[in-house]
Image 1: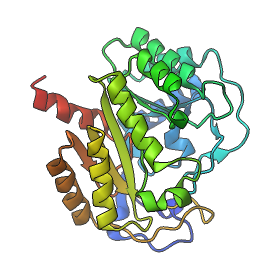
Image 2: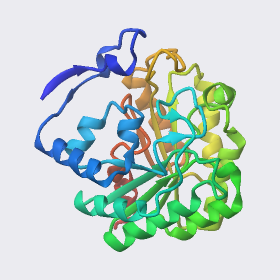
Image 3: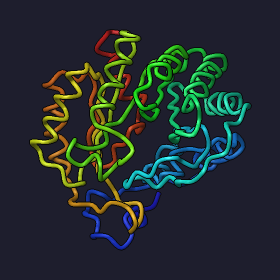
Length: 301
């Protein structure tokens, strides 16, 4: 174990506060996960988005797979994933993904993707194929998907839902006022519609969304965002600290102290979210199995 200050996540930015220092594990399990991921040839958002939790998660044999390549058709100002012309979808990607999920013995698999605005179905069919491949490989595995908004297209949303995920995650990322600056190709109302429409298509499907703090939002704006998510019956919420991937990305306005995350989590639970994860290192898929388990425990499962 070594103490690592995550200055590489926010280069040439403000000095990170003490609560953004953590002991990051190294060792055999991490390297085993890396080998499995590398062998699969499927990208991970852990590596492509420079997630600070990668060593911790991979040391637990957790990885969030990113299908449809590692080049995105959108340019969000918070995201480290490369914006460029993507390659065509790989026909064998669902098989390779399922083999990696089985090799890692995952009980909760998170599948995300770059935005693929270049494809006729924006990648929805590949999502469905990957879900089904994981189901065949690991029938008891919980499958969580984290797609882009598909421009709110009903055919795409239906395709992914018909694949049979357990959790449909779509992130708002930030408050309405900051949407255009942070994710210019997306729309706040459209993301809310996606979550609402998914729930109407599959009422038993759990919906989930995530928000980053430290981009300039106010608590009043954040409260409204939480209420907007509950208005579309969003079940699960994640709230984390935005960390600037490079000097070319959106700046950090402030580092939110842990106590404030605790207050936000309590507020979200009071509004009716069924499971909430909030903290400086929380990300959409961080400890996703534990976040889901909180719901199952309350159900008595």
